[in-house]
Image 1 (tube, rainbow over the protein chains, first blue to last red):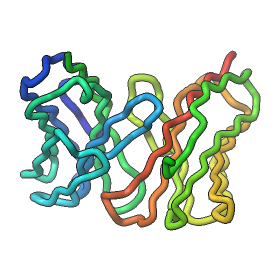
Image 2 (cartoon, rainbow over the protein chains, first blue to last red; image 1 turned 120 degrees about the vertical axis):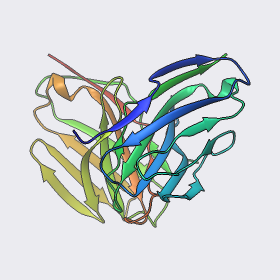
Image 3 (cartoon, chains in turn purple, red; image 1 turned 90 degrees about the horizontal axis):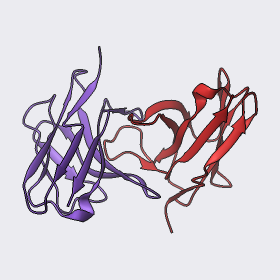
Image 4 (tube, chains in turn red, green; image 1 turned 180 degrees about the horizontal axis):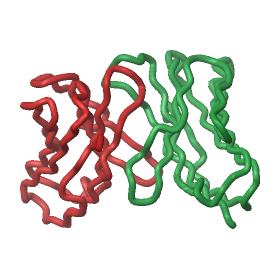
Length: 111
Length: 113
């Protein structure tokens, strides 16, 4: 089954404790992105990658890091999480074109 | 001002009603217009995709784009309880870039049986 998977689905952590959210896709897509979704603000892009070892900032990159060492994986790293990073996070992948395939989401709470 | 404005609702309609969902935008460079549907506790999935102005129909769904007014709409005919979801409009200036989409904030729709 073609899909984007994310882990964990739910995470509660404390301020300053480094965490990684994994994302993997099995569709051989070149493009991958991370979004956060907040009430009233919609989906905002954090980082995107157009291919292995090629990443760039989206609209809200502060406090996040990403890496793309393999085509299928695109982890999101929060080196020192803060409460304002409490959000619902989505990973997405796509070929060149408008349709993106989203993962199921990771709900992160930073206390 | 946000680049894309969308009424958040919530919108509640009886089964069988015609639903109209709308977005306005300010960036005249947008050429690709999409509607994503997001069920509760799921990721968004592409519902409709339109290039430039005009209408596109797919079953009970019709997408309309009016670039002169910077206004897009999604119509749902004969709405069903299974249509209950959040609908997100999205727009892009270029089709082939990962720096792709600007999303509206979403409209929450409930179709009552």
